[in-house]
Length: 344
Image (cartoon, rainbow, N blue to C red; front, side):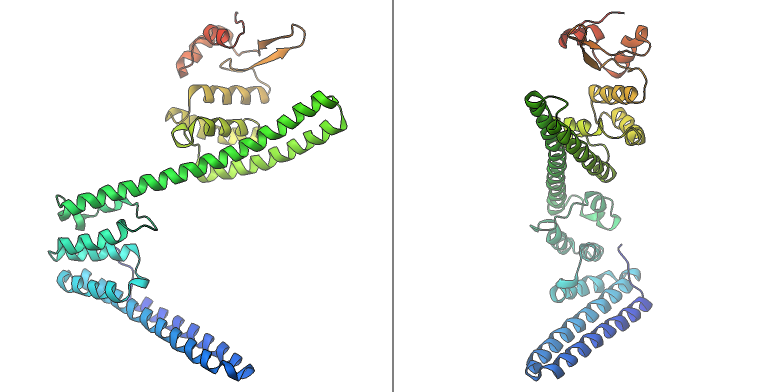
């Protein structure tokens, strides 16, 4: 049960509320001295504030009384008092109190009234209730199992959860795609101006400086994103979203990537990210640290041969085993798909 109040807490709260009301009364009195015409407004305000404060004080007292009844297992009396609470002081009541009311009614042998309270928080159109686990693990609500309305309540909570998760995933996807759009736009400008003015031109240098600045901003945004959401999966943000995630992460400072390496490894072990995304991340990090790549995913354009070629690989004789171990296709097949040649 959600038991929260004590007599001492009630007394302290009443004292604080009284202090707040006295403070507002003092302010209104000062305004009255400055402008006598505000006398009516002062009385209206005093009446409304006093009424609100009185209602809230009564509400707190009722909650305290209900806690005592529930602790003493006087469930029938508590059930009746919850009816009074919700009928007159709904403005102050939170979801936890409605669940407490449902508990009291179940224990008092009033399952339908308990369902009324639960439906009130589950079927509303705002502030969707999504805590499915809290309901099914609540021992006081267990007698509702088999009740048709209870089953519908649980189905609706699951649907509420899917709605929330869907909207959250769309937001995550949008955040990543915004970062990727910034990343792509800066590089597109550099490429276009390089062709027009040359790589060493003043125009291109200014754009490169701008690119470095925006990359640093994206790095901060991505760090905040990971700290809040962790490493997202493709199921959450889609193919474009996961590509955006790694595109930004792979150009972050080496220290940032090393810091998040355990999270990336954990995400791969839990199959949240693909073997290709994982291998690309590891190989880019390896090369940026001055080492050879491990999985052979990286290549570059060779100026001397005017053809792309694979960058050096660590222990190439065991490369196929490493690739197979994480689920990558054989190196020769990969090279053929990329239009490259591979051979020891």
